[in-house]
Each structure stands twice: as structure tokens, then as C-alpha cells.
Image (spheres, one colour):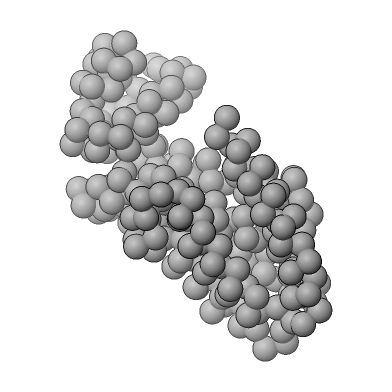
Length: 214
């Protein structure tokens, strides 16, 4: 029986290899060779490629959740946390776009489960965040939270956005779409407050991203 530490190492290695080489380009033999372990040991940890792929996608979601947690710890500003969550989800879809696209092509059932769990997780967090923001009196009285959450969930999974080659350009596009939409939901007082802090928001989000890449 493989240890949990050993399993974690396998999943991290497989995630990198699947995303760099593709699902067909990284075989179980390749992964075992990269880890300098026998194929038998690898199969003792994971029954096959589908099980390993599922755990790789779970790790992507775990990384996303950890980034959300960091944002909450770093700032009590709900608008910043909401924007950072949206950026984080979109960037992870962008970072692992090859893995996600090929999972959809070759393993549609696994892709469906991952996307459903990813969307449900984001929707739950966004619902909590938007409800909190509304209770603080930040939004217009007629702002439709449900429509906003639908928009944000769809945006973070947008395939056109995922195909943007340059990460900085991807961030620029996310900012433009998310910030513009959020501004439309804010009341006049909150809009003035947001505009006065936008530079601070950007710096905190930049720092969080830099820390996560270390």
C-alpha cells in the first residue's frame, strides 16, 4: 500500500506531465519513470490512468481553494476577495487548459464531474460572498445576485479566455470583464469607495499571486 506522501508526489508529478505533454503523451510508464519507481508501485497507488487523472483534477481544485483561503486571510475587504476568487478560478482554467481540454475530449465523464464540482464550489463561495456584500449595503437595491453569479461562473470557464496565450493578457481581460460587471452592481457610495481603492486591490492580488508561484 502506497503512503499518502507517496501518493501526493505521484499526483503532483502526473499533473505537471499531463499538462505539459498531454494525456496521450504522458503514459503511466512515463510517470513511473519520471518518479523512478516501478510500474507495479504506481499501480499499487492508483488502479489506472483514469483514477490518477481524477486525483490530478482534484488537486487543481485544492490549489484553487487554497488561494481563496489566502485571500480571506490577507484581506477583510469583501470586494477584493470576490475579485480575487474570480481571477483565481479563471487563471487556473487558463494554466491547466491543455489538461482540461484533453480531459473533455478523451474522458468526458471525468471532465463533467470536475467541471460540476468546480462550478458548484465557486457558486457556493460566490453566493456567500455576494450575500455578505449585499448585507453590507454595497450593492444597488435592484442588483440580481443570481444572474451575477451565473455570469461569473460562466466567465471563469470561458474557453476563449482559456486559450489566451499570455498570462498577463489573460489577467487584463479578466479584470476588464469582472471589474466592469461588478461596478455595474455597486451603488454610488460603494463605487466611489471602490475607485479610491482599486490600486490597493491590484497590489494585494499581485502579491498573493507572486507568493503562490514561489
